Image (cartoon, rainbow over all chains, first blue to last red; front, side):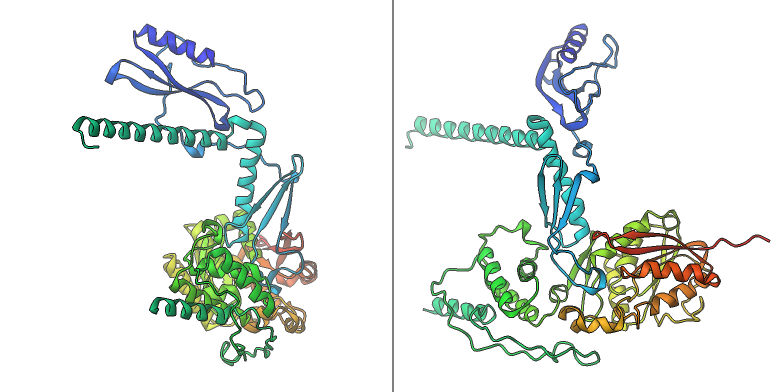
Length: 198
Length: 352
């Protein structure tokens, strides 16, 4: 991470701007590191989302900054992280064991079964995923694979996985909301005391 | 007092259907086509048993699932738990119970809907007919008796067909036996340049196909023709000007004598014309093979869903009868890994 910040700091100094790092995250599993930085002063400051170079999944800790210093293309910025950019660890079909709760037997026209529960087992890790979200077996199979990828992401990437990041984000927002409410209550209390209402 | 009475009434309506102690095994007469499908099934609800729950607490979703499941199990309904869950979810306006909290309370209109559905389900009516719709891939199709209910295997058939470059570039397709219209409608939603002609023997199925197509605004790209697919059918008969690129079908393929021994849900309520494939299950398939070269243009594809014993027989037929002008490309397995889908192609025209 240090590389990126150094470059940014240098860049902001060159154009005599203020440079504040707001938060730094590893961008899901695309392997990039990113940091939200405020550049500029007061109302004219701009929020930038900066990216480092591409990392492979296995070398998460290595930082490689590909942003060239001292050029105008210091910062690529994106307003929002897009969810569809998420890349999960690849799923290898041969690692998976798929079972259907409907059981085996003659399929096709001969039988009319409605249980569409799909159970997937990832053999190397032993993770089991069940999916019964839809009435279509095919949709359930697709969704089960997606859930499996999410679970594998948490398994391999731990704290930095998509789910963990989303969870942290939720907690952060919750705390923020709570603080706002507390402040409001505090103000109300002060107001009441001042006016002698209580 | 009035409130209490109302609640009691409510419990009575519910427990008439959730009658747990009613152990009389209902005997079901064999369903005969041509007669009215529902009225014919003799069924009597036994004397309302003493409802064991006295408290006036409202029922939650979880409890209702449990009660219905037990009730279905007593009645010998297959897949009791699944049926109960789908019925309750549908009564609540959902597709599955995944999104419904188990402790949600059920209120009156929902309970009477559930009782109504449960009553139908106890008469062995398939869940798909009870709730009147079912999912096929990401589509929701209307289902009504006696039209054949699309099976999950067919979802795989359209997947394999979509991987075929001939299908991807097809502008004109013929489907034999559309039923609810699942295959045609799904392919039409996936391929914007496609026009489909569907041949269907049953009038009810024709209506259902066109209704489902209307629901997805595809009626102008789908021609439905109510006719029998027989030997000697010509392009004129099915109102086509030129040969089609692709023929896709999920024809009836169950041997005639096996049908009587299938699940009650299938034998009693589904149209036998969509199931019965004659002596060896190959009757309609033979017709399709024979007519394929007359209906499909050269190097066009023929996709079939068949019984697991059929692919080898079909390959044999195609190889031993060169006049069919077909060649066998590949057999694909379904998710149970039994051979189910056949891909055939019409021979290229010989250049003179």
